[in-house]
Length: 404
Ligand code: PLP
Image (cartoon, rainbow, N blue to C red; front, side, top):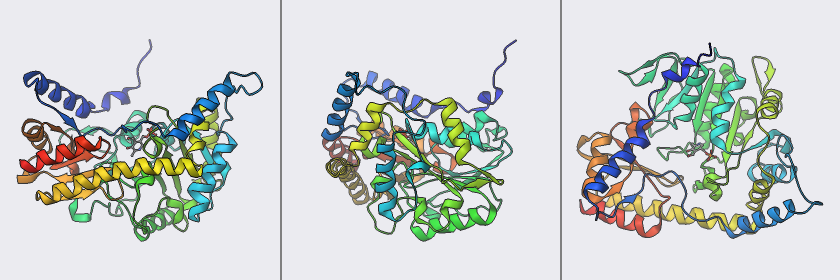
C-alpha cells in the first residue's frame, strides 16, 4: 500500500493569503462600489524592461533557426550568464566569487526550499521570526523540525529568533547553536537590513561553531544605503560558512519569467565534506536548467542599458515606499523598513492585533495589506504594506489611511 510523507500533515494550513482573499471577497460582495486598493501583494506590477523584451524576442528567433537552436541548457547555467553574474554582482563589489560557483535556477523559492536536501536530517535550523515561510515549511516536509505546537505556533525542533522593534528587527546570535541558519536581508517581511559589521558577527559565529548560513538576498537590488552589504561574501570568512541565494524576480520583474541563482563556494564544507559537488549532483539529477530564452533575458539585465532600465523600475517602487513611509509617519504610525527594501512594516495602533488592523483598514479605508502575525508569532501587532503597487493607487491608499 502506498503511504504518504506524514511530515506534510504537520504543516499548519497556509491560511494567510487565502484568508485575506476570502475577507476581501466577502467585503467586496457586500460593498460592490468600494474601490479596493491592494498593498498586500509581494508581486511586481511594472512590465518587463525593454532590454529584457528585446533579448527574449532575439532568443526566441534563435530557437526558430536550426543553426542557433538550443536544447537542454548546461547543468549549472549558460556561461554567458554566470560570468556576467560573477562580474557584476560579486567582483564589482570586491567579492571573490567565480562563475563556476554560481548555479542558475528558475528562482529563489525553489533554491531556498531545496537547499536543505544536501544537509543531514539531524541538522537543527534557526530562522528569524517573523519569516518568509518557505524556510520552515521545506524543513517540515523533510522531517527536520519536530512537531508543531499550536499554542506557541512554533515547531518544537526549530530555533526561532524573534525580530521586533526592541532589537531593530535584527536577530540576536542564538545561545543554542544551530547547524543551519537562514538569514534574509533586506528582509521580507520587515524591510530590515544588516549593516556590514552586524553581518560579520554572524559570519564569525557560523565559522566558530561550524554552522552554515543560508543567505537569501532576493531583495539585494533595493539596497540604497552605503554601509549595507549586497552580498554576504562582502564579509571576511563568508566563503567558509555561507551559501547565497538571489532572484531576478524583484530585481528585474521576472516573477512570471522565472530566474534565480545560488552561490556555493567551491571549498565550502559541512562535516568535512564539500557542498559544491552535492548541490551540483542535486541540480543535475533533479533539474534540467532554466530555459535558454530566459537566461538570455537575464543576461540583458547585466548590460549597461539593461541595468539602467531595471534601476528605473526599482526607483519607481522605492518612490512608492517613500510615499508610504512618509505618509504613515505623518499620520503618527510607528513605521519600519521601506528604505532598503520594498516592504514597509508598521505597528498596528491602539494595540490592535494584526488581523484586527487588517479588518479596520479594509473596512474603513478599503486598503488591503498583510497581517504580520501571518509571518510568525513575533509578527503579531505588526502589518506589512508593499511598494509594488502603482503610484496613483499608492498615493490614494495613503491619503485614505491618513484620514482614518
Ligand atoms: N525569497 C524571499 C525572501 C522572497 O520574498 C521571495 C518572493 O517573494 C523569494 C525568495 C522567491 O523568489 P523567486 O520568485 O525567485 O522564487
